[in-house]
Image (cartoon, rainbow, N blue to C red; front, side):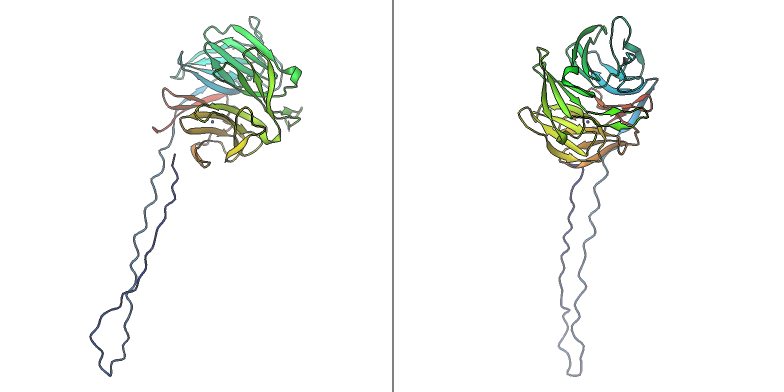
Length: 329
């Protein structure tokens, strides 16, 4: 989930002594010269606070919303709804279409169990032209973004996919998908059988493991940083914002934060990240965390509306989506 909001202000205090000039003392005058008090400059005022983001809309009525994506061509928001357990193959997940004014155009635009559609617990979303890709437990499914008709499905079960979470499309048409490697037991405890991985699905639908290992920290959100020619991956099980590119054996740490990270968006030179740990959406540019939005409990896979400079936040446990206006850069 994007400078220079913090500056180090230094204050140099110059001190000096001035000797008070007096006429020569009389022999009986024993008064010594008294140094004048050094002048202290006035404290430099702190920089003004960064303009705050403001909540402009709240859209209710979802069922465990996990991801929001802005389709810039149709100017519509897609919302993935798990509708129950994140790991249950119950075929009751659905994708909603929401207008930028907050009107729900179609709550169940794509619905598991209807017209031959399989959709269990949809999470991350990505667009490639008119194709909407959806991460769904151990498969990645494709639908027509305009009609909702199913197009394709790529199973990763033979590679042992455990918890496919977020997906991103690169210009070649390949997909990169995070596997957080977690499960839930019968009473809701989070288990981590692993392994932590990022899969690559080629344009020919061939599936390979792009990178794996504990250094991924239960990877959750993934975004393509085209300017930096890298992927940015955020850890759900750690506190790191990571950078990785094909060919690297392991990711590198580019920032640290509160952890419990979910969604990530690249906006210009900013990296926007949502955190369950402290209920925020923050910006990371130079390795420093700048909190943009606070008080959002269970912020899942955020989206970004570049046309309106808005952050789109699915409130996972609140069954709603909050739309926040960012200040002008």
